[in-house]
Length: 118
Image 1 (cartoon, rainbow, N blue to C red):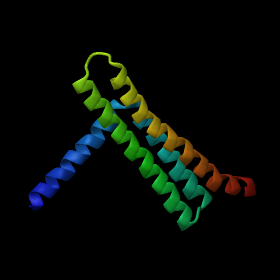
Image 2 (cartoon, one colour):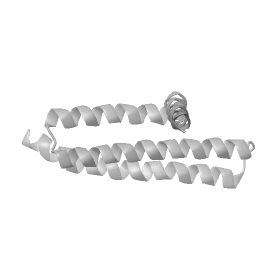
Image 3 (tube, helix red, strand yellow):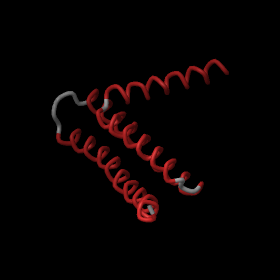
Image 4 (tube, rainbow, N blue to C red):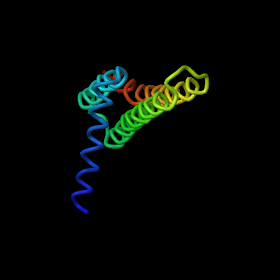
C-alpha cells in the first residue's frame, strides 16, 4: 500500500519533469514564478496576498500540465491533421491563456500599489 503511494509520487514527478523539459511555455511559467516569488518577497506582501499569488501560480502550472496531457493524447489518437484534434488542442491551450491573463491582472492588483508607494 505505502509502496504504491510512493510509486504514484514518482510517476507524478516524472510527469512534472517531462512537462518542464518538453514544453517551452513551462519554462516561461517557471521564469514568471521566480519573478513573482522574488517580487513578493522584496515588496513584503501580506499573508493573504501570498495565498492568492501561490494559488495563481498553482492554477497556471496545473492548467499547463493538463494542456500538455491533452496535447499528448490528441497526438496519440490523431497523428494526422484533423480539425477536431486541432480544436481540442486550441481549447486546452486557451484555458491556460485565460487563467494566465486573469492571474496577471491579479498580480498587477497586488503589486502595483506596493510599487507606487515605492
